[in-house]
Image 1: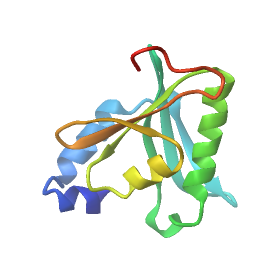
Image 2: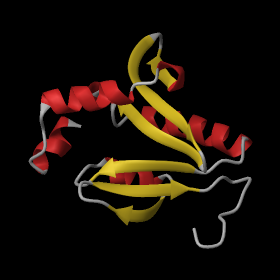
Image 3: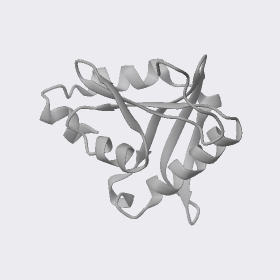
Length: 130
């Protein structure tokens, strides 16, 4: 994520650490492991209208091998089983924007620094006006 923040002139290690610490919720955090080694983590939090994918982080050395896609498919299975819509935000200029759209997220809107996406449950259908 550092590279993406640097591209838009927003990398500040203290700010990044504080933002993560403020939003940290251990009850919604899971490790991503491959052959017993932790290679990342995901944070999926409930919200009134579905689920929020707050973090999907795979260590740089493990990226590009499909691990993020596998983790995302697991999250999709859980959201679909509960008929919940999944929301995610991605920093502008980040490769994660392509990752999320490639996996079926639909662009909703753009904020000052982030793009926002939605994926409706395979069990449910979007409500009128979504």
